[in-house]
Length: 125
Image 1 (spheres, one colour):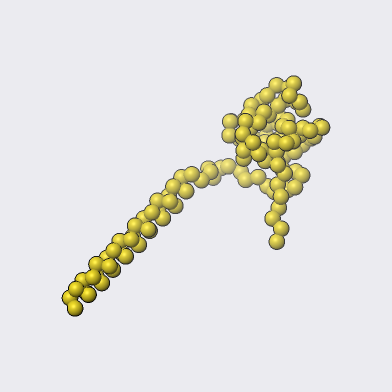
Image 2 (cartoon, rainbow, N blue to C red):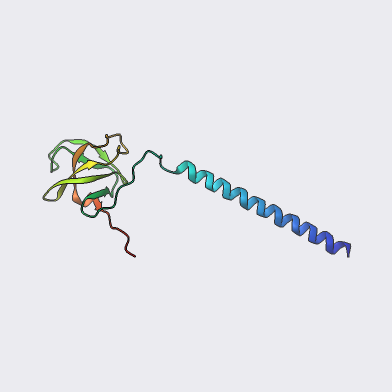
């Protein structure tokens, strides 16, 4: 009978150790996720169809005019977003809703090809 109790105790200790390890790994994962989260000062894009647009490609030129013959003010990356303030052919003029990933200031205006910006789509229930 002593062996059964010892086996039970050993198994119980292993289960407890496994649970503690799982809890610890969860804490590490949660801790890592917290570190990877965006800064609290970053503004989320409001979802208003045909008004706000998010860049869908990395390295998109943010230009001074509607066309590739205009100078680039800088580059936009996935997640940069802005409010549409004008359109011209296959181009749209955006006012940045927050500082871009490359450092362009919030409220900077510029032109992007429409194919590089996605309209938001509200969730429907």
